[in-house]
Image (cartoon, rainbow, N blue to C red; front, side):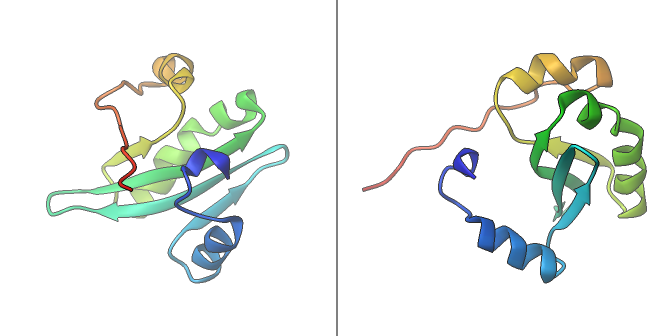
Length: 105
């Protein structure tokens, strides 16, 4: 949970999954935590957390597309380390914006 920047604890994520606000896609050696962001003009499947075996995660590309479509989403987003830009480029992902954060004392 250190990559959430202090926004969530594991208990928060478990509560969101149990409450249906987030979904868990568990694989053999990896997992995704997903949520839907509803905007005025589109719905996006957001990959909130992903971890485990990178090859196994990458192998789920078509599954994630199908999941997004089934949930009425026309976009998939993922927030993560800069290494994901290079790692996911061949799957059609491209860097569209950067997320910056400033702590307010």
